Image (cartoon, rainbow, N blue to C red; front, side, top):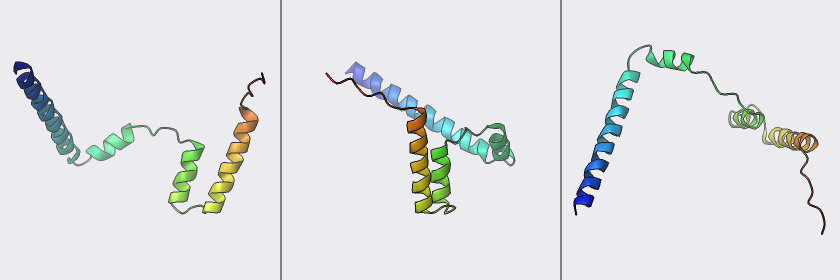
Length: 90
């Protein structure tokens, strides 16, 4: 019974701490200039070719046919660069 009470209290404390930090972070983000500074300070991760193609497809910059053709060329290039070894026949 004591274990259950301690477990419940620790879960409540974790919930309060998590909620409090989320509220504090959102309040800090409401200040003017904070969002622009945070975005400019954070470097963007490099985008993969597949990710760039999906982004262009979703933004209607390329058609479905162009997307499929680009993915086909990418798969062909990957086969040439990184062929899969065939298992030996027993």
